[in-house]
Image 1 (cartoon, rainbow, N blue to C red):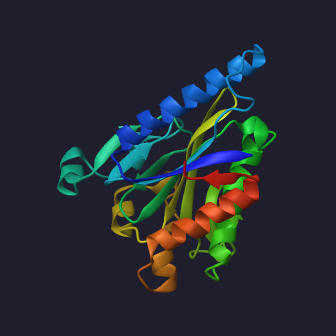
Image 2 (image 1 turned 90 degrees about the horizontal axis):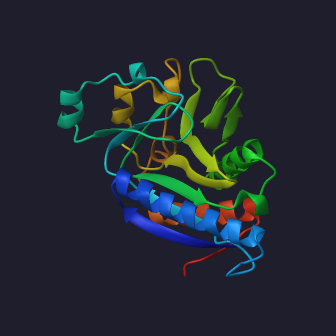
Image 3 (image 1 turned 30 degrees about the horizontal axis):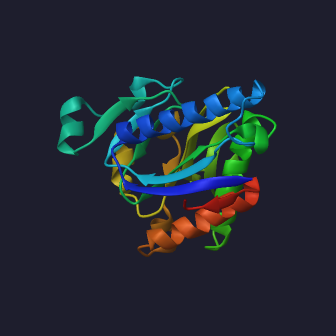
Length: 233
């Protein structure tokens, strides 16, 4: 199945959210046209977006503002925004050096349900980490990709996942820490956890990463796991 890949560069969170919403509504309209046997094309469009955001904390629908540990003045001092969003999950941080992936997909082509969709996102990250000799893992009762889940006090998260699905079309997605400034996570209980650490590819490998090279590894693994053919058109 074909999907269009777009690297949006550095883009404010709200602008990227609006961009996603427009693509989602486009795909939903295409699905409805197919159901009515009035298709413009035989298949709906699908998209994989990569983006980096300026400093922003986002709170999911099921999250609690209590997990934001900073006040408005402290956020201003760190040049950070705070946004209530419509994805699942609790609070997380986005910023430069982090690859945020937004798959806008007609899930009918790729999975049998939301749970399988999230598992495939996790598997894509795990396989990408494997190429860097890092053992990514799932953590029971939590989404995302973690490291050292069986070592008390050492468990750390390298990729957060929070999605929204409407009429079988996905938006939002994952946040993969590459060269991320991890100090920003000190201002929140990441994803609602008070006893888990956060890490990055840079921290695990002890060197600054070529983020464009990581994007290539990541997009290739996503394409393979989901069985999609990515184009830049």
